[in-house]
Length: 99
Image 1 (spheres, rainbow, N blue to C red):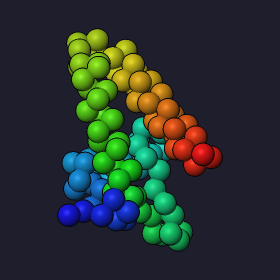
Image 2 (cartoon, rainbow, N blue to C red; image 1 turned 120 degrees about the vertical axis):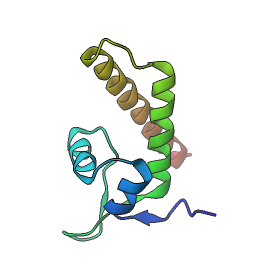
Image 3 (spheres, helix red, strand yellow; image 1 turned 180 degrees about the horizontal axis):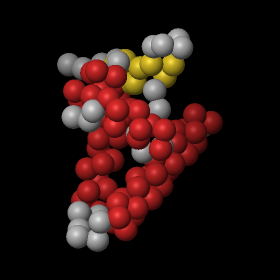
Image 4 (cartoon, rainbow, N blue to C red; image 1 turned 45 degrees about the vertical axis):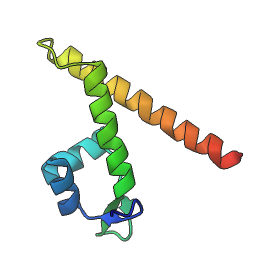
């Protein structure tokens, strides 16, 4: 059984997502991938649950906006939907924390 609070280093994140480390870093900078937790200046980790949620979101976005031949426009729409959903999740967490 996996622990949802488990912390993963970038090599493990890369293995879990099948993304290259450089892609992960680029997407973090672009806001397309969850930001890591900085344990120190040189040690950054991700929570497994946050990554699982991101993967689930990517599957949901793919279901809502199938890949098309429209290229750039389709990719922009996928990013907008993904970012919007992530913001909704954050609002839900904040609302639950204040109850």
